Length: 363
Length: 69
Length: 164
Image (cartoon, rainbow over all chains, first blue to last red; front, top):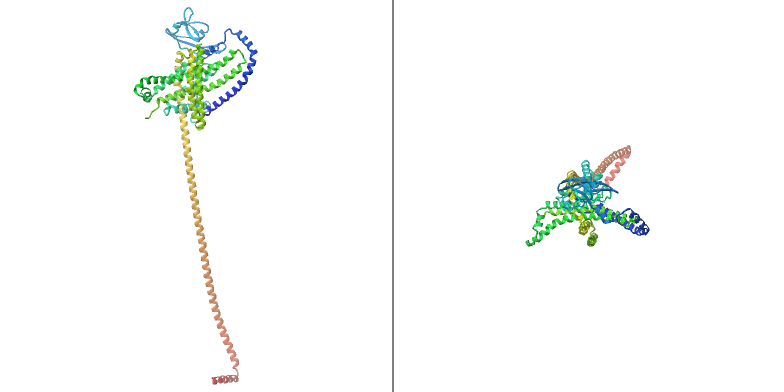
């Protein structure tokens, strides 16, 4: 199934990078630890003077992983994003730049940001949790903006590829088309066909869209600066939607054998009360596992990369930077593999569930 | 305190997953050594099984996320 | 906890965006791409099939040619063998005929020679007889020119006759 040369090259290159990295870290770690001692105090003093706040890695990491109402560019520059709130009194829209400096009085409530979440503030300037419950946040956050960016990218890429197919009908693929065709064929021949069977063609659009959507968002998530940086596929809301789509597609397309297996399995009748809850949990647990897998994989990857970067600031030393950067480069290469692997696994399991649901049993 | 306990839990989950993925990898290599012509099929099954085991470990990680903030 | 709590806004926008993406890509990208790929695969398969058929046809023709060639060669061999036989026969016949003709000719020549010889001999005999008769006549004439000798001969002859 995975005999494609690309796959093998990837594994081997990863191993090579891993070997180089191990050698590098083995040599660099002791070398830098010697230089560490004298430089350490000085650095600490300098940074300590500049920043009044103590560096708290988990806070920084969680902030980077979580969604945000503005898109950080560099230093203190942010791109403000539109805030859309559906309150019990009506819809309210304003720019998130109003929230940069304290409270903003909207039409219906006064709002403030707390941990990058919009909260309602009462007359005394205190956060009003009860009123916040009436406000639904439909803002165009960093994740939403990043998702739209990825969607525009996907559309540009694939509509141009499809026009290339029209232009070069019956000819060998060229350029971007020749790069993407093996991937499309991989999705068809190694994901859809073996798992779904001869009715695969109907699910191809879904599987291809899923695969490329997850893949491109995983990749954009790995880009540390402006157009990237959003942790979209590592956000539970996104994976929840993807998994819910899988759940709906699987159960809508489930045939009578699928439902018979759930509702009237081949066991004695008196076990049915036990079987039903188990089977119904089974229906939901599979997409749930999909949701958690993608979310946790990507989030864990981001956390590791950010933790490694944080090491520099935790030790307050530039000497640790080469080791940290080497680790980060290694992790990023691994994350490149994980990006495509998770897209593949998600699509594969979706195809597998669909295949199970539409399988014809011949007794 | 909750954070540290959650971290311990995540660590325990990783032990299980590590053993699981190790078993999968080892058996896959054995299988490939026995039947090199089936290498691609074994690899495929191996990756799927590894992803499933990894999923179990990630449940542990997610539970440890629950303890955050 | 916050990390694993889905936010309604993102859920909403993801659903909307993903479905729109699915619809647009499904209509404008996947359908044409999959059709094009299938179409191309079909044509490639067809071309391969045709190539295979052509190869088979070629092999068939080659074997046919070979068979023809073999047959032609065999025929040629047969013809050559026959020709050789005919030639030998003709040569043999000719030799026989020539031999027979020769023998006949020799025979007739011999006969002719014998005939000629007989004729010649007969002629010679005749001439010798005539000649000897002439000679004898002449001798006799000479001897019997005087009467005395004739009388003496008659007397001799008479003496002989008396005694017998």
